[in-house]
Image 1 (cartoon, rainbow, N blue to C red):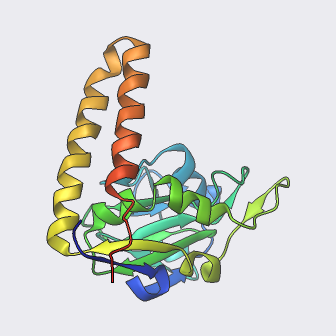
Image 2: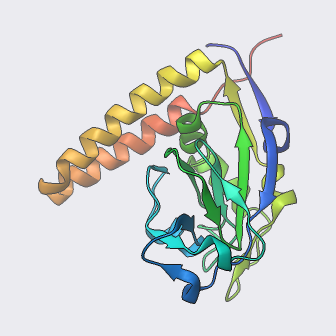
Length: 203
């Protein structure tokens, strides 16, 4: 087993901060790209290259930006199981983050962070202590305490390459039989969790 350290996100992040509100009325056809928290649940997967929404930068009073490789967490949701769903921005434009989003900057492999934060273990940590109600909230301190395994950048790149191949296979099967798609998805989730669950090293 290769070496790694387990670290809370507060020790992985170089910066971690909240976005600021962008109302539905402020979303435009053109302008600066932006993400509103609901889109993290409905539109984006583990990572994405382009924002589906834009806004007029001059109309936004409190501007909170994110860029390539940053992790976005939605900190308001309807389900305990889904709270703090995250995605990673892989594009190269400067973008604005709306309210109820936490942005984390870091120096790790961006896709690795996307994958490791989508594991069952990470999701259990995100939902721990959350009370099921009409709307579920998280916050910067709670997200900062999520612990993830951090291997070397080289090993992170190797893991990303394997999981990217599984993603490609799953996407290629979208025209195949539903049972086959489900089986491949379960296989991907199994190997994702297997690759990103590390045994403690002996003394």
